[in-house]
Image (cartoon, rainbow, N blue to C red):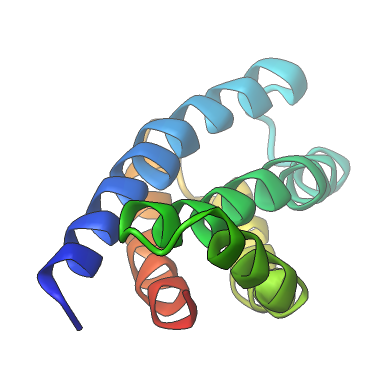
Length: 129
């Protein structure tokens, strides 16, 4: 892997998963509260998958090729070829994590724990892009 690709992954991870993910969790907490009842956890988990995941995954799939100089056509092709598989990976990793996190991890620690998991996810996405 080239240094430019590693730098692009770190930049996208810091912006999308780090800053963006933390802000998104604040939105979820503001909208649904910090409760841990089953209906609140389900709402947060589904809202995260339906609203944040497509945005964040698209940002990675388009942003990494653009930041590495591959051009718009390559970025759109990467998105087109990888979006469904990335969303399935999101479903298998983050949906179970969110159920656990929204139930057991205090809301003040969720951004950090999400960022750590997202770092691994970003590396996986970086391998696809």
